[in-house]
Image (cartoon, rainbow, N blue to C red):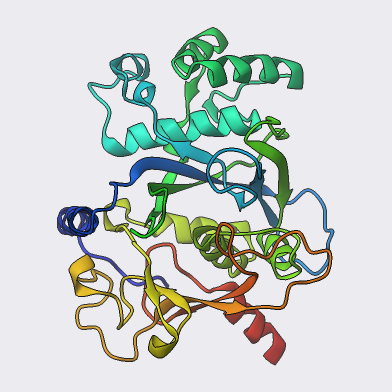
Length: 353
């Protein structure tokens, strides 16, 4: 049973305080403020049982970024991108029958728009029955002008299904990175999700696969991940049934989802690794951790990055943009929203049976 979190109001105040601390620290060190962004972790029931090594009964949609343009070149990521001015438009509030848009509603709109632009999947209510050709035409319009997304929804007689998205994670790019993002990750489960197609520009490949299969491809140096993608995939792979993932999702209080700005740990500190709130080594000036009342020296919430020998012919395996080939290992002894069991601990448990 997931641990209980603080009441909504108190959690919201803490989340705001932690976010302010993250921004203040970045400003003090001369770093550019991170750009608001939204990413969508979309799941559906599994279509086939291959490969048999993957125990999950569901698949997750991921895409490979172009290695020639855009952010995160060559990395495999969840659909998403920077929030645009059009996502804040009062016209959306009027269309959706709302008095105004909250911050999370704007981010949800951005995530759904980006999903459509990058994959051709429209997450709407009611569901839109689009041919592949029709989806291509409409997404091209939205790619050319984000404001056209509202017009497309009007034409189809649908509304973006904001209620389908649950806010589960909040990652802020480390201050030393050249491009920084304040990314909100949303989870959505669709019993029936249409096929996806890469746009051929920023996105070169898309795939529906079980989370553990994506993780295996990373270990085999076939694809490259950044830490947030590995972390979320590891959580999903630790819950091999869609029902278990839905339970994790339903236990999340969105007001208790706090921003995590990774902090680098040197070899002397137990690294190379990135640590997160709740870890005993997480800097206090990034905001006191809301995950534990009194952190102990043994508390761990970190992602180790172990250097690996590059595989001959391997095209992936990179842990950071332009970085060395690594393998990740998640260690977490503190409760987090949308945490559950990790892929590594689930595999260790299976090995003991």
